[in-house]
Picture 1 (cartoon, rainbow, N blue to C red):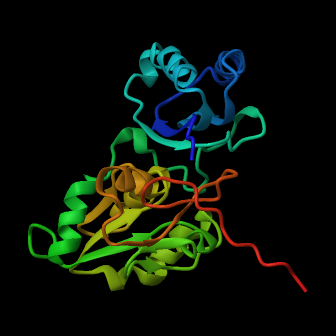
Picture 2 (picture 1 turned 45 degrees about the vertical axis):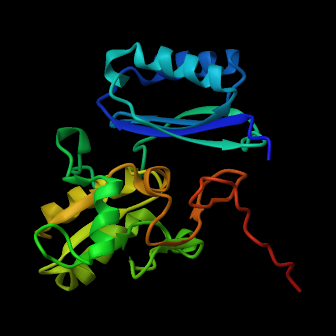
Picture 3 (picture 1 turned 90 degrees about the vertical axis):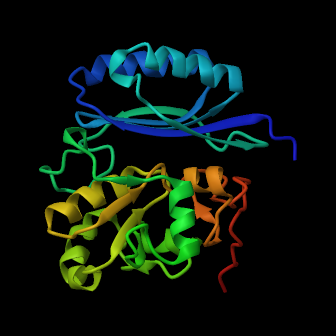
Length: 252
């Protein structure tokens, strides 16, 4: 495959109070560089998925990071043969990932994060560095989990992320005495999830830093089975970060 298109995914929890003007600026810059994808803006931060030529992607990121608020933004990269988005959109939302728990403010302090290579070592040795059993908790929607997940991961079969707090209340006792690692596609959901669980009294809770995509990038997917669902025309990515479209069966 001639992978000529660069895809990026990134998010950052940071207070934003100039959403309309910021929206116009980011949209104009992206369109001028022929980028396609989606940028979500909210008072709590930014969440983005963009595709284009590598030099155009880097130009847009440089302009974004020139704003000191976005300087810490960390980006996950993958390649594809085609642009997996039809147009360029910048939207203002109430939350960049909806949880309906306004007290959860990741900018005020993250839950502890575990690096991908450290997690791979924990999974291979069967425990964390303190000797506690490690439980992987998938915070994604059920249809995403069905495409692939970590071997043995907890899957609470939620249909949308707003159901996650209720699922925590139903299953919290199952997590006692274990090291719990929440994970999701790129890190944004598991960051909110980990903070929520910590506030609900779940001990030894970590988030997978950078999510599944960063784990694939850094480890090649040790202990992961299947592919990772992504919300664009590639559908899923394999542990080599290559597109792996789902098989669609015709209905009778």
